[in-house]
Image (cartoon, rainbow, N blue to C red; front, side):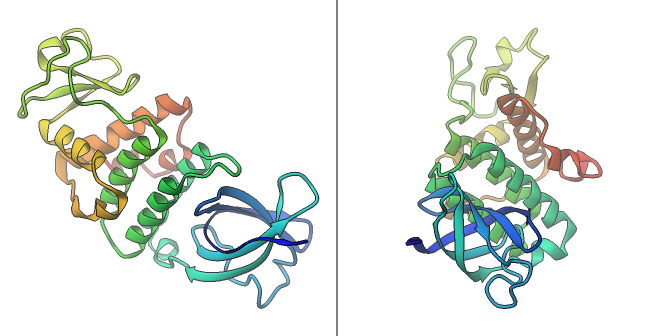
Length: 256
């Protein structure tokens, strides 16, 4: 079978056994998007795939097309970064698992989105280098909504159409991704989250920046707690399901 792509940057999102000796591996690749590939002899190989197909691993892969459907054949895999800290630090692993679940939830086979690849790579690299896990998750979530086309709108009040003052608290509508100013807040408590002025300013600032500048932002305290709370509840509404890896934490308050 002819080689389709060679030296393609790829993140391992999932893998599972196929028969006695093979594995099917789910990758998210730069320029190509999500693909599933059969790694023949992955259980027996001592050279080709040993310690390379673990979840979260960053690889350069070469793959070819199989005869059956959309399944590819993994020919070679060269390790770029194993992100070892994600497997040795429990909080980092939990946050990486949340990011992985969103990636699996929001992507489809061969749906290319280079912005999403760069965002996931930035998040895993940041976790691996010891950046505060809660900050990484908060920034990832803000940009994830942006990349997917679900950017929350904090420009004007959805009720009266005016722009709130820079010091004013607002209500965030987790069902619509919009906000309501304090003057219009009466009767809008259900399904809304109160956000401090600093929170909306932080979210709006992050939305405007490319991924490679995200490390400039250090949300903390109430701002960080509110970003995580809104992100969790907004995503539950968007995708109409619970995020199991987030719920699997001993308590969501471990992150909020």
